[in-house]
Each structure stands twice: as C-alpha cells, then as structure tokens.
Length: 245
Picture (cartoon, helix red, strand yellow):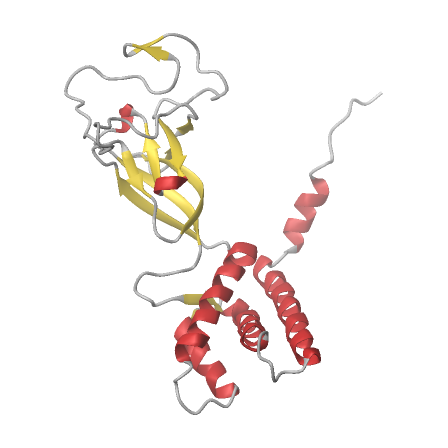
C-alpha cells in the first residue's frame, strides 16, 4: 500500500505548478487542500480511527474534534475483542443539572440506577423494547448538540472504545492523504482556486470541474481495489441450496 503524502507537500507542489514564486498564497491553497481532503474523506477515503475514551463523572465522553460518525462503540475486554454497547434512545442527555443549568457529577457510591425510560425509582418496570437482545455491557446515546456520547450508569468509571469516521483533520496541522488520492486532491484544489476568478474563461473552469470528478472516480477505483476473489464472493451471495427431487 502506498505511503500517505503530507498535505503540506501537496500544497507547495501545486504552488510551484501554478507559477507562484513565493508562499504568499500558501494559506489560501492550504484552505482549499483541507476542504478537498474532507470531500475525499466523506466520499472515498472513509478514514476510520479508534480512540479509548475515559467516561467522565457525568456519564459522558467528549467526541473527537475530527468526528463525523461512529462505526462501533464498545468495551475492550481481556480476550482482545470489542464488546459493543447497546443504543438507547431514552437515555437522558442531561443527567443531573442544577437550577443554573450546570451539570452535577453523579454519585455512584449508593444503589445503582437503571438506564432508559423503562424504570421507576431505580427499578426496571418492563422489557427493553426495540433495543435487541444480548447487551449486558451498557447503553449509549449520541448528543450531537454538545458533541458527546451519553452513557448508562453501568459504565461509570470505565473506558470505552470509539471507532469513528474522521474528517481527515488533525489538531497539530500535520495532515496527510492517501497517495492514491493525491491527484484527485490536486484536481479539486485547482478547480476551487480558479472557480471564482473573473479572468479565467468559463471553458477552463468547466474543464477543471470535469477533471476533478474524473480524478475522484479514478481514486475510488484505485482505493477500492476490487479483487477477483471479491467478485466471486458477490456472485455467489445469491446462490442458495434447494431440495433435490
């Protein structure tokens, strides 16, 4: 698999290709590169990250700054496998709040509480309808307004594993892109940088737009790497045994 390419290198290379002798336009090019990286991440790259997050006192964990959507939330057990948590749409997004709206840390030294809407005075009053069976590890709910995961009381003081789709951004600015998608990123940057320039002919802008979509299609084909074995498995997916007469 080709190594990743630093976004900084792609930006400097395109500056040279455009005949820019100085780096006065570096930030403008970098901004276009970041937007292009996010576009490719959403459509093709699907950069999956894994983070171990400590549960806060208020039964929440903060979502990473580059979070787009989760693929798995669970606990990493001693046998080396992730045991997933169950989704509970009835979990309160505000556990304990005072009159000012500030959260109060929960105290779990006493009796344990039961999560969800099917409880009264800490006791389960009925079945967990719609959640599915087999979940004994705890429950979660995504609070997008506050960029966090809300968890049930069973997870107090523990750490959870979050696998999620990243938008490709990096807090320290050392962003990278898959080398197989490098040309697609260059095409995106070139199109966006000339898209609103008055002195550029409309035909050139349209050609740049078509080049971007074509390079994105090629990048998808390279990254997917559709092997003959995968084709055979898909072709056999609908084959079912039938009784012989």
